[in-house]
Image (cartoon, rainbow, N blue to C red; front, top):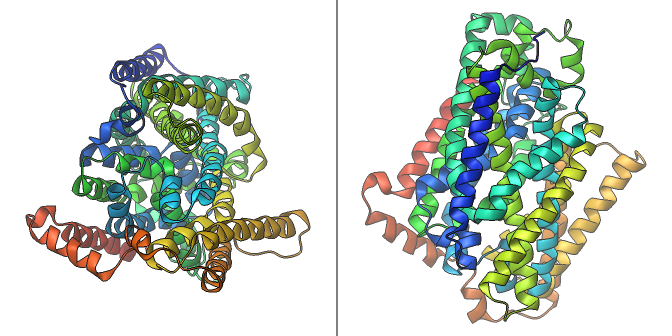
Length: 533
């Protein structure tokens, strides 16, 4: 096993990186004159910045650590979450993003208020803030603390988490979304370089694909698993992975906020597809290294890794990389931590400021709202730091992230989908669908984990809860009032909307055509799936 020690040059590279990123945040703090500037970067973001920011915010340290660990212990099927994200991004950009941008909203809960009423807005805002703190921010801080504990094992996890939270929160508090997006672009490049370095060196150590196959059960090298599989049965791709992906990419403020800051619809769409393109090579640079580790560190020999697979990527980092390069990769890990934490903190503060403070105090000045956003960011930063050490109670980081989402997200998905595609859905039905869906989620979680009354693969849970919420929305709608057709028309999709989209893209060069770009992306995904079927 490697010696987890840093040399002086490694520490210098990490320190320089942190200084640069925090400096960028404070530079942009001088440009924050309005809520549009602070929370949505002045609605001026171009496709490259959007794509890099989406990628960096999603592919955080929790993803690096979580995916490599899952590949080591259960196989490469974890990549299904990545290619399905590409499909979800295409659907999101085609059907949902035009309505989000047209309505000039700041937050996703605000869209629910426009389509339904303020009850749904407030409820969803609380749910989103809770998820951002307990899932996204806490998960990223936990993954970063694992790396610090390798270097300084005597350092308590909670202290590591607090340090990381403060570093990430500094420039987010100062610079808002513009600081987040520009630093994310830098972090995305570093993250890609670091992942390629670890993957390439690990592959050279392994020597051949046959060496991997010799120590890895065949089912662990397949993306499509049998329906009886305990980890990721193939029906779960539709009942779970797709639905969880839609929540994450299509309704979660944490991710959607970047596209809300787009300068126009085309740049928002191109940015979403660019993020999808960056996710295609993830299987080679983030997932397969975990499988390569089975050759380098046999689970039978290295019991510590078998018991705690989240340590696989940090172990490879210290074992394989030379001095100096190790510092670069550590800087990338710090980048990944920051890119995820800054995004969740900024989105959570946006939700509280615009969904609650702005509503309670409509006459509040822009300066007051920006200050409120900064204070909220600080409070949420500390709450996430307090929660992160509790993730140790779960078998792995990836299981923690996906299990919590499986119960939290389905009612929201049902509400957005039926709201956009069914004009008859009324304001009472949306609120009822959210309440009943989450009540059912709590009931199922208590029965399964509290009393052990049944056991169900967690990827089947989202479909059950979406169905419960959708049926509730339907029944309450048909038994109640019909919404105002003129109001609903602004926030519901029709075939005429689709014809307008086709007319618009037909006027663009082929390489800017959203449908051509989407077809190319789907073709790339089909090739990858065929390679690892």
